[in-house]
Image: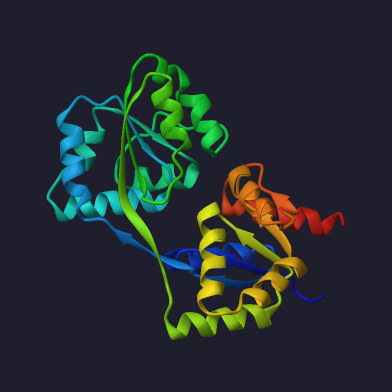
Length: 261
């Protein structure tokens, strides 16, 4: 039986691990790093300033947010672990929590649903109590959660510790052509940003029609409702949405779908 072909858009540092996870389900895997994640060293000053004031909760929404925050802090000789020891730390998902544990940080808050909606539900009461909350995350993150918490009484500091930069090298152009020729059975999108930047990249390399045909011929899998909504707004059908917003859960959902089709 021919292995199911899976394509996923992942940061370069996660592609090898993603391939290993896909292999557990006997999937053939094509990893594509649409963008690179660049640390915002200027966030160091924002970190210092935010922690100079009283803080109740610090929120990490991804593994990359954890790594970039600690890299910036270490470079600036700022003891982030010590600061986090005196506040409540919130993590979205077990991968983010596991990375924080690696830095010796205890996680006391984690939403049942690994999404903006789950975070809203978890932090609503804290917001109403006027909690001071810091987010350490991507510059491209959506503002829905920030607006929700502020509207409900929280004092929120949103610090962008890294930003995505689209890759437009010749090697990236060749990789995109390889992806088109690969003709995957399933294409995985892990965020709204990934989907938007993939389309932007296709336009930059003048292969938008080929990519549109690819998205119509493959089945589309999305992590989270927000990602699925963004894809659907572009007129693309989303076939699978992970119940929990993790890459592993999405692979499991695909495996289940092909077993019962």
